[in-house]
Image (cartoon, rainbow, N blue to C red; front, side, top):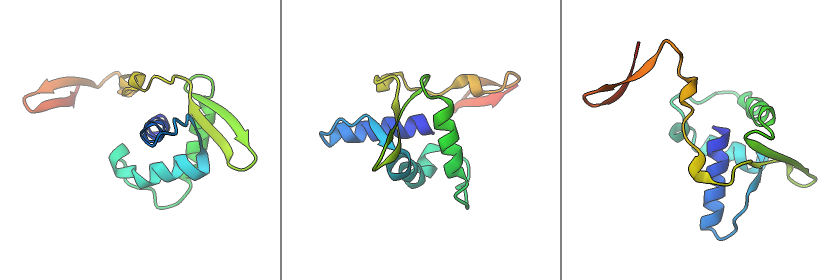
Length: 113
């Protein structure tokens, strides 16, 4: 979700003529995820704000592999994407369990064993 949020924020900034590539976790990334939760995941919306710390852990865990990082005195923790080619962002099919594979069903793809 973090990678998707940052990619969308980048794309929106390009459309606005700003071409911004790094974003504040608290002022931009978390509000984007919160605003677009239903579009980004099938998981139910979290009632508490404890997921904010999960976002930070996810971002920090993948610094230098997926995300760039810097601290800003005014905006706090700032994150961007290592790869600036937004076309490279795609679903992580490796996260699907080894015992579960996608199979083609008549009306689309379905999970199956």
